[in-house]
Length: 580
Image (cartoon, rainbow, N blue to C red; front, side, top):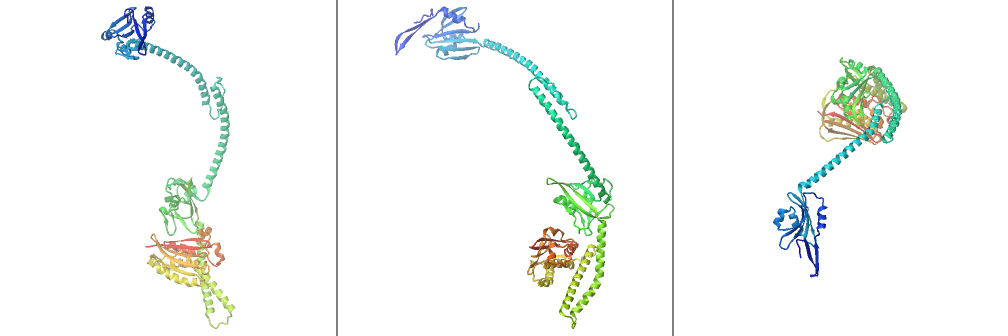
């Protein structure tokens, strides 16, 4: 069935396991030559057909020396002869694919129905040579393309950047007073459009800048004028003005402040304001946290000296200058950045006030003697038996007695004020049992309260509370407070006196449910001769000195007196004394 010389092969045609015929192939030398000669695989490549024989040998049809040869050989012989033998063996078993050897690349494909395989082998070096040549070719083409693209890009970019550089040069020349922007770009592209937009913006900017420049000039002129006015005011006013930062260091002072404090011009800058503005009254010196500036910076609240507080500043020559002081914090968005202290020389006002007090004291002393005689004669008329006086005449004498006693009380109050303001009252400090003291005061006031149908109650803890103070001066304070409570309480009202200790202080609290005091007037209650508007409807005979005297006495004793009230509800007065 096989003619090796003629390179013929035959195969039975099986149909349902029955041989129905034979299929044979005969090699044609012309066809085979055409097959081998038309391949362009190079001279180092080899291609062959391999057939498997029944005797375990292989038949190879290959091209050598311009001839087509058919050779039969064993597998070892074939392996020594052909580089693609291993690939041929795989193909004879029906496989297709690639085989990579140490020195050759082989491709094989099985031929169905012929028990043959077609194998193509090429040396690795020859394969790489083609790939390398192709790579070099591709690299050359790529380099050429990149070079050409770079040259074209440079030429194209130069055309664009030249217009952009021209635009940048024109923009760079723009400045206040130089708004010329000529249209020089005619490229017909986006750069020309950008040139037109910039030219339009330049015109708008010129107009806007001109308007802003005019407004700035006007505002600067107004600010300069305002600054000159403020400076003129600060330099000419008689009030001392000191500006300080949040640390209390002075950042500015007007000439009046330097003159009032007897210091050289500019010498106050960067100094501590508490040291440059030492304050005192005739009773105490303000130091540390008690200084108004320290309180202003700590609490962010305005300090305004009360009219009844006589402040003096100790100047550099050690003399005392009476002043009226106001300290205000400077707040920016709720944060304190410093403050402003304004003070005024009130020497003349203090002298006038002193002269007034002296006159009142002198007049009171002069009135006291004849008033005492009048009271003595009135009392004599009231008590003398057998006097031929009718009821109406006796009522007149009673009214005279009441008015004379009121006048005597007023004179006593004026004399007390005079002595307190002049520092003529010196307290005698002794140990006082406040619980027993209040019992005595309550007992004395019960008769006065009873006349007005007012209940007076004393509430204490039962424990002894002792303080060092002047009992007589403290009694004056309590009598003034209780007198007001009785006077301005309604009939059938209630007055409560209580005693407690809080943080080293003894507190005497007097509460009533009387007419109360309007909130708007409570800040003036401790001023001399002040009376609230609503008390005139109840009592028209008050002097307005009771609370003023009480405050001055408590300051003399080293304590304090405070008041809380609600109109129509009542008043609570608290007297505080340090427990020693």
